[in-house]
Amino acid sequence: MTVLRVACATWVAVLAYAAPLYGQVVWRDLVISLTGSVEDYNGNLSAVSNFVADSVENAAAAAGEVAIRGALDLFTNDRRGIELTFDGGLRQAAATGFKVRDYAPREWAGSASLTYRERMGSWARLVGRAGYRGRSVQDRPPPPFYLQSAYSIGSGSLGLVTRAFDGVSFDFTVDGEAADYRSTVLGSQALDLLDRRAAGVNAGARWGGSSIMRVFGGVRWTEYPNQASFVDDDPFRRDRRVNAGLEWTHVGTVFAQLGFEGMINRSNSNRPEYDAISVHGLFNVPLPGRLLLNVRAVVTGKSYVEGTKFARLVPGEEADNASIAYLQITRPLARNLDGAVRFGWTRAETDIGREYYRRFGGSIQFNFRPVGF
Image (cartoon, rainbow, N blue to C red; front, side):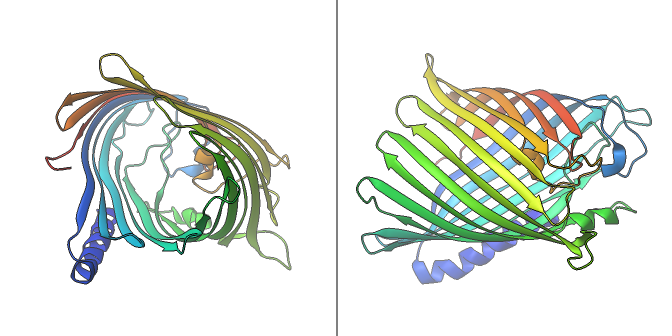
């Protein structure tokens, strides 16, 4: 509830401030989603990341979710614009297969992002963004049913995208974020170890028409004020990550995207140092009968530099370094209603390095857009 209250308060405050200055707010999209799913989790995981003395190698769950997302133009003209996007929802699951008891995890999640765009003459576009995202979890299950802990994350970025010079355009971005992890479970103070402050610089170049090629690279610095590095003259953990890659995108009747990225993470604490390589693909293909096929796959290989038995990760890195595959078929059902069937598979680390969980699931989703959106 707290997450959604903060997101809604931000939204209302921005609207109240912007409307008198810029006139009428224009809705660009509003979607209400209902989802039902069944999921199977497996993995021989350590219970160190949980606070319940219960664990199995295989668990199953059924879940229902209601969510709402939207986008508004608070102000727009030929030179500048302000956009607000938001997304929030409730997910209730019933998990079975554990030794001590069954669990009923409930997740509240929400995010809000305010984006400012301004044209800088005829040569570039400035983009600034401020955002918040958070989640709350009740009755969090032990492994292998993996759910991230509750968190609050504030972020901001400032970027510049140039026009094409001899067919090549460039983009530069600086960003920062602050993350606070928490739990209502007694004895979970260890989550404070995951609190972090981060900043990054990214740059890229792209060229092409209907088929676009982009090369990119960046550096990111992260500090963990509550994690010890075990280095006397540098007592708190500090990481630096370098990434580089390339991506090809084709826009047409069939949308296709293929990409490759390499990452190197180094630290004053050798526990979380690793090298990773990731390959991803995304395809949207129209089918007969007004069907739309969406296929996505990510294959990631990861190797730790040191052979330590324990490597606490940043929650979120398990998604960055995951192998994922899903297939979704969508079809319009009415004027403002579409339905989708989705199958997905994930293999990813928990917040404990080298501890992997696997998830396979299927879901049915309905997306409703009220009249006028």
